[in-house]
Length: 307
Image 1: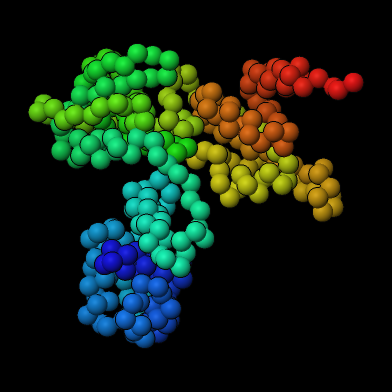
Image 2 (image 1 turned 90 degrees about the horizontal axis):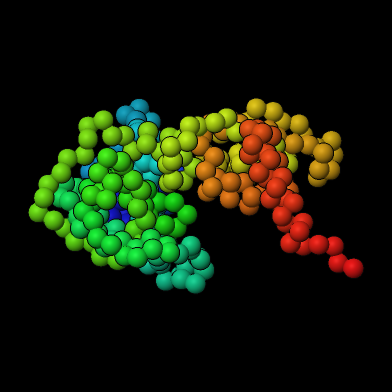
C-alpha cells in the first residue's frame, strides 16, 4: 500500500508537471488508494511519501518556496530505458491489477517468458556470483555452462541476459531467459568489467541481437499515416525524420515521410519493417531494398491471382 502511494504521488506530480498543494489534495481525495476518504494529505504523511519516493524510486520531488507548488526535479528518471522508468511503469501496472473496480477493464500484454529465472539472474548481478545455467536453444540439445551476467534487457515480451559464459569465454553473448531450464548460483565470484556499458553494447542493435556486422545508414519512406506511429514510438533511438511531404488533401495518400536510422539491419529489424507492409518502402541501402523486393516477389508467388 505504501509503495503504491509513493507511485501515485510521483506519477501525479509528473503528469501535472507543476501542481499546487490544493490540487494535490483534491486528486488524493479522488484516488482509489484513499481508503480513509481523506480530503487532505496530512503534512507529516506527505513528507514521508516525498522521502520514500526519493529513496525507493529515485525521483526527487521539490517544493517551490515562493508558490508552494511541487515539481519533479530529476525529470530524467521518467526517460525511457532508465531503471526508474521501468520500475514506475511496473508499479503502476501492479496497482491496476489490484484495483477491483478496474478488474476486467484493463487488458495487459502478457510477458511470461523467463519470469522464473529473472530474480536469480538479477541477484547474481547484484551480488557478483556466477551462475550455472542449463540452456536449451531452439532446435538444439540442452547443455550446461557457467555464466557471468552483466545486464538484463527486455524486448518483445522476452527477457534476455547479457554476459560471458564458459561456452564462449572470449565473447559477450546474449541468452534468452525463457530458454534457461535451470539456474543455480555458484560460490565463485566475478566482476563486471569497468569498461562494459550496457547502453553502448546495444547502441547499434534493434532489439537484442548484436552481430559482427558494422552499422549502416538505413533510409525508409512511409505514408503520412504511418509517420504518426513512428513519431510517437520510434523504431530505434537513432531515428531521424529527414523529409516530410503532407497529403495534398485529407487522407489522399500522396504524402510521405522519410526516416533515417544508423544501426545494424539484423533479421529482427527486417521483420519489424515488414510489419508496416505496403506503408513502408526501403530506400537505402540497396542490398536491403533488394531483399525486400525479393520478399515481395515471394509473397506474389504465395498468393497468385485467382482465376
